[in-house]
Length: 248
View 1 (cartoon, one colour):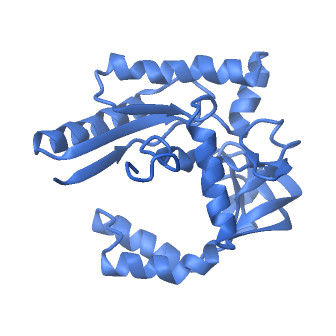
View 2 (view 1 turned 60 degrees about the vertical axis):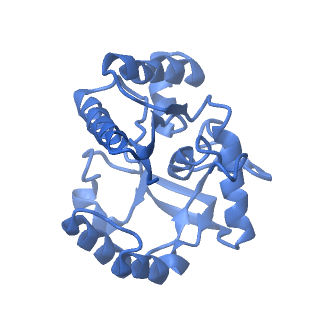
């Protein structure tokens, strides 16, 4: 029997749900239902991305603790399951689901054991809205191209992931079709991006800059896991990583 894992992107919960996200959930649900009707074994999963700095700042503006804020706003996203009659099999809120943190920690330790993580000092321009660093050439007029704001200048010591060592293996997976990306226009776009050169990624933040919010880096209490590394790990623990290897 064919097995399909359908996932929807997990939204930041710094604001109320909007129609664009509802559309994505419905589209994902259509795919999951279609695959089930074809007799496939399907797992359909969604959730919320709670551990970001923009959520912290939204909570501060609202004058409530961060956990209270993300639980309240995140609950509105979870309520869409019933309102839209979604056929979800699972929903993970990354700040409160008991499966999430162990999954993030297991993934971090697996990367560390492979030698993929190292620590170094870094300085750059950071857009909180994007939760990402930008180079000068990526900032027309010195402003974030997405939000139009002037990024913050940040300098600190973080953990980095050796993404550069995976440049050729990733490109080869895409060229051979083992990693299938559709439509073809997106495949060409991603392949061009990989072939242009991959830089190592900062995958942690200082506890001070994160306002103490997030999953602590294993064995380094002064750092929390960067929200994108943390959030994308949410797709792993619900199917069984690392507690149920056979099921996973």
